[in-house]
Image (cartoon, rainbow, N blue to C red; front, top):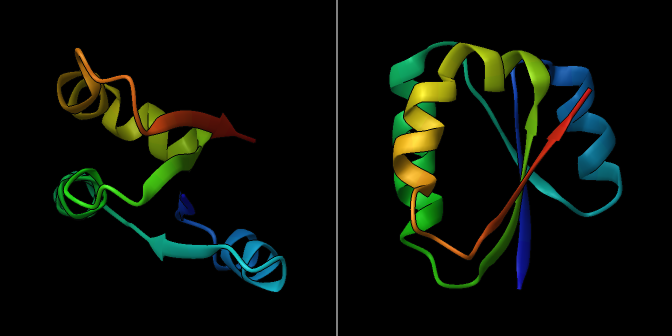
Length: 78
């Protein structure tokens, strides 16, 4: 299973990239929704890490998309 990080910060993405984790930079709710759609459609995605600021920006979208799903695991990071 793959891990993916979603953040507004290029520094966060660079840090995770050094650890071998692919990431996506999102700036608005539309980008977040598009990113989640792609990740949730990929059965290999096991963990999605979302920065706290992105979570706060799109918590309604995230709740709607993750409702009744067991995988992938969604973890917020600071």
